[in-house]
Image 1 (cartoon, rainbow, N blue to C red):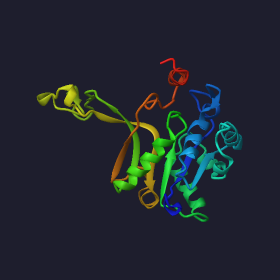
Image 2 (cartoon, rainbow, N blue to C red; image 1 turned 90 degrees about the vertical axis):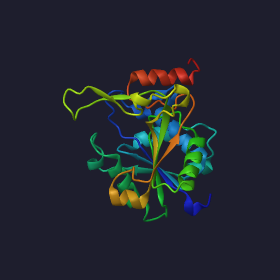
Image 3 (tube, one colour; image 1 turned 60 degrees about the vertical axis):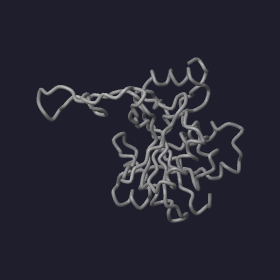
Length: 243
């Protein structure tokens, strides 16, 4: 990949997690949670710069030092710290606000057209996921893209618009119920990463703008987005090959 076509990556690692205290630096099977996606991003070698955005330098230091010995020092020079202002450190701040702030700071010194938002709560994201998703993003001429897993189930939702009308199907018609073997299923956003053209993000202040593409993640743990201790324990079992 030509260097001028490489995207940047932003990994938000704010302190103050409530369900799992210090979640982003908590040791998951002996390694800080945030180090997993940082290492995968580095090993993919597709990023011009990988920016860890946090409100505490200690968080950056912990995930940086948690990288395995197999990560070459030459790769580590592409990691940098974005220390957030107080106004960007609250628990109600939108990720788009952080992305735009990082872009404003970094585009003064480097050129890039596309940006990844990578979330540390999905530790099973692989280097190949980043490589293949960016190839797909460019090939399909997407404006934005999200990672997802496929669910082959019929989905229903309660109708909040028409009073007392019950539930309605989201992804199929009961009048033409397909055999499961012919059913394509639906994509479930798994929160691992998002890709956006910088120009679109600036214009719409949103990470998902048409034309939206989907990159399907597969394999063990692809559907895990760690939010509570149940997710955490499941991730440990997968890492230990217990499930």
